[in-house]
Image (cartoon, rainbow, N blue to C red; front, side):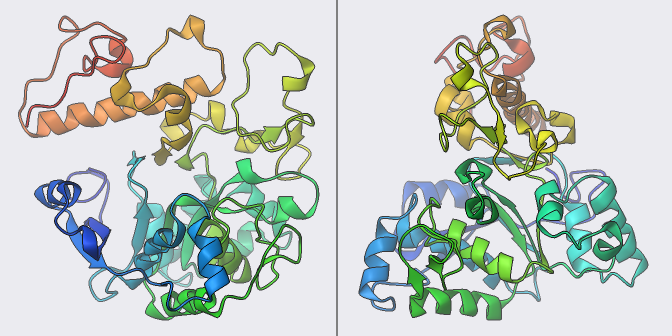
Length: 385
């Protein structure tokens, strides 16, 4: 929907692939994806029990959400560059709201071309580059960005950071999104790092991959969120962190409290104790208002990620909507804006397929958010295929 020819302002045609473990070929999920014109890439795990050191495999198996299977995302690098010049990894609980053209242009065109210069100017003016990236690389300026080569874009997971020095500088990548220029050599290098097993267990500035500090304080430290954070930190001139509110928006909180150091939680609208007041920026800056995603406008958002909102409000299909007067958390404004876009996308799909679109007279239950696809809590109106 956000690519040519459907979107009027996008000049790039998209092809959607599903990266699937080979043994899952005949599952119901794969059949559904194929029915929706998703091209399935049946792949083996890129690193296995046989290829890894035993203690690394055993530790990785218990790490993050998915253990070694999370490394399947690295196949994003192996898309044929003769077919596709840019490859994007997206979790299934993300939703694209706007074209990626500015990011595509920045990767595709060199800085010394007119297209490349204009793309980099838009990258700056549209606020894509993370303020935290600029803060961590003091020698970065608009002038240097205009002359950079870009091979990868990503966002970081600051909810896993504590502003106590080294941890604020060793923040994990957020694994729901990253965009790369396909490159088999980089894929091979990443898998070689895993198979070499140079990972120092524990938490500390000298732990993690090659003693880089990307260690066990990170959720998923041994797979995507720690491995790519380490790799991109080593190649920061060409791998650039994006503003996570604009791209990979989760409606999260840039601060933590002294009493609750690492707990991932939203800001209470009516704090019942001074312990719940947000005080300290997770990225160690004095002022992190520019990364406050809980009240980031949906109109300035390119990609949303439902992962945090799902924990409190379930999925949009659960129809768990509250009146604004009952909001308890600041992030409800962001989450319900994301839900509205999910229902808007469903409506556009039905319009495209010339299906009957419900009117407010059919169901007025928070119609401004659900567009008539909820008759009440837990009463979602399923699509008729």
